[in-house]
Structures are given as C-alpha cells and as structure tokens.
Picture 1 (cartoon, helix red, strand yellow):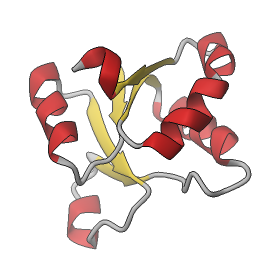
Picture 2 (cartoon, rainbow, N blue to C red):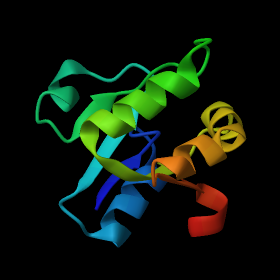
Picture 3 (cartoon, rainbow, N blue to C red):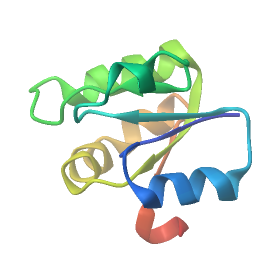
Amino acid sequence: MNILITAANSALAYKLKNQLNSDDVVMGDHMDLPDFMLKPGKMIRLPDPKSVSYTHEMLTLCLDMGIEAIYLFREPETQLLLKAETLFNEYNIKILTKVNEL
C-alpha cells in the first residue's frame, strides 16, 4: 500500500514514517524543500493549498503514484482535503489526519 505523508520537513511526519516502517511511504511537502531532499525519489513536492485547483491536483498526484492513504499534518491541506473526502473515497484513497492517527 502506497502512503503519502505531508509536511515532510516536520518531526511529526518523520515520527509517523518510522512508526509505519514501510518501504511504500512517500514524504511530500508544498513548502520549499532543498533539491538534495527531492532527488532520492522518496520525497516529492506537493501542490500548494493556496491553489484554486489544489484538491484536483492532489487527487491526480495520488492516482498517478498509486497512493492509497494520505496522512495530513498541516491545517490548510487538512481543511481542503477533508471537504473532498467523499471524492477521494471513491478512488479508495483514505484521508487521515495527525489527530486521529498519532
């Protein structure tokens, strides 16, 4: 199962990654990440929640990467994606927040 964890530059995200202990975890962030962090392939740049098409950009990214679960750590992305939870569920993508999983 491919899992996406947002807020890749936060300690909580790394804590969750270690708890999941899976090779199928991809870390991502919409905030600036140094290029050396993006090159290994297990960290990606996510769409910015300020974008008017953020929800669709995230859905497309998840479908392209075969993501089945998203762990959200930042409030703006959480608010937007929880509003679209039904849409993500139609594609069998679970939206999980830091509150209900840590």
